[in-house]
Length: 362
Image (cartoon, rainbow, N blue to C red):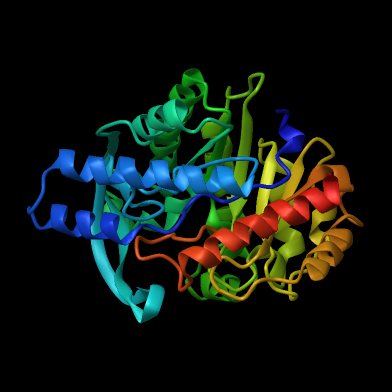
């Protein structure tokens, strides 16, 4: 399958089964061993792969089910990060919550173990279709640099980013050598340079243009030399604010730099509210695909197929239809407890992606 034909895409994370959540909690308390946890992970991933194949989605994932959260296992696979609890907690399903965590760079960054290679090997054996592997982009970790704490290891944030990008690049190279067909970097922080977070950056004395430049340089650095036949490179831009980057004031300025500079094939963009404006897409180069994240992975209500088609038509005024694709706006479970939806909701959302993509592109 060529890069341009992954019309029905998805971001990565999927809901964890209750048995897996219990096994993870039991493992943390020392009640079960690594092999028991691995058994539950394997079983859950095989089940979720079967569900995805049934929906007809063009690209499969392991749901990030082996990870505590979308970035936690990667951060914990790198020496030099220290985990700290923060508040407020994340809201999960059925009113549950998880304590939020942040990572601070407290020493030199060195890879402890492969970050996603073992996950990819299992997918390669069992997916039975095209699949993707996701990793947090280096730019994600820029707030982890604290001069008063990180300074003894790294004089400046760009020094920290240089080491981190090298670690991520080595992992991406290993995944590409394995034959993974689709590699995706998750980079939610770019929305920080627009809208409310821009005002926060200014209040903190951070130069947004400089931050954006460093972020793009770091993410591009880990993509250097990755181009090869049959490999798709994607970058997911989300952001905590509803609707992501395209719903923010100032998105045009960020989009011009982001789309023009980053060396990927596909931009997966959260645009799951009607506040999102597609005009910034005019900056997307002619050799890149835009995956429209029009379906809200965080609510049970199913979007109207007619509305989705109209939004795709609006986006096609900026980017030709043959360079567009469709996905949910974000993952279904960026943290282990997952979004406040159930399994049927998740399946229906994926089926809606497929059904709409087939009706638009055939």
